Image (cartoon, rainbow over all chains, first blue to last red; front, side, top):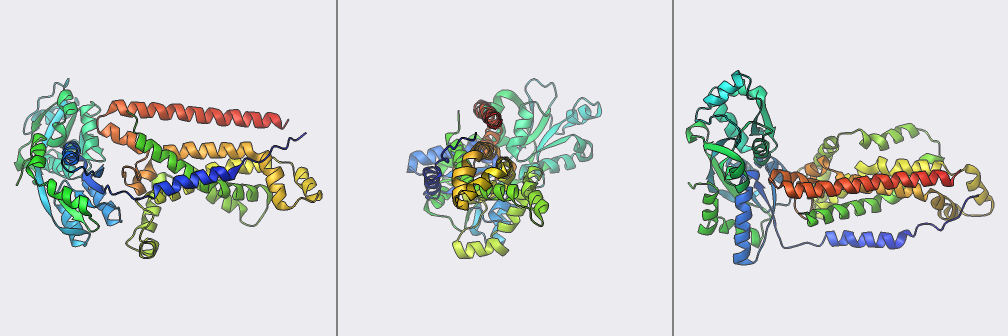
Length: 260
Length: 223
């Protein structure tokens, strides 16, 4: 015998879902900004200070600068873009996606980093890295993806400059952005990493790794540029200016950034 | 720490997706269960495609189609001032497409398991097709429909690749719980990542147990 149960009451349920949907589309006055992963921790501190000083806030999406550039070209609703190099900002400027030419807010550095327990000797010329690969002791080197991450490009330049590119290539693990590369290296998943000084200066990495600064002569300068995008509103413009003030610069320098 | 904002967004995304999938699933589920027509196996293949399609493939096509630089995306921008990438609405569309087989297949099985004689008897008693649907088919098929909804809900909650590709990881707009876990790992915040990962593990386990329990009950009630 088949029981006839009354149908599930759909309409109240549908109405409640519709209500949720309308909630979603309510616009907020907190602008979305896009930022390179390398500036993540410094930016978090700066946003905190910005909030204290102005009561305003921004929402940040972090990724590699190349990824973010592509998203902006495809219409992502960002109002400000903090890139880890100047190239992408120039590109967006030429494509009329920006409001102004942009501004170099800091200069980045690259470090050679290894987990704290590792016995690898760190030196400017990566000679210990070279030896360890040749003896088969070193398996994995973490860098950011040089196709779309500026710190990955710089890491590749260092390896090319030192004549290590061919040797290290089969051993590279590519982070989707520099923060992922840093995570690979600091967790020991990779035995050594070429990452940004700004990430090396976060408490977590400082606690778990050893690192040395790589000489500026080994790669093109990492000119961290930012630019307002076409749809930038009041808050984004204020934040853009705030990033050029002393307070923001002090925080940036705590994370190892210098200025042009 | 649980990222409540990302969790709420994920739940919202899942619910809105269900809102669309429910009628779509019932329509296609019934159609495929009761009717024979030319091209049926082709349609079934297309509807099942998301089961095997890499999410990045779907993500790529959506990105191309809705890119505001050309074609449909450009038209949407000119007409409505927005397009379907890097916003919540875009994620809804992607989730609907990606969950089609999860919604349609259990419903199709549920409708197919209703004996034909019962539907015919109802029609003979003078019930209109609409009455047959509401008073005979839906009450009998509801466990299948419910399990389809639960599976789609859980599946949407766990979407990653496609959300990252067409969502762009924007907090409170497209940053779902799955993306948030990925973000937390890259922020060296293993504590938050483990809290959220474990919550999702528990939830997935509950979901799958529930659907098994439901189908078990359904089968027994038909013996």
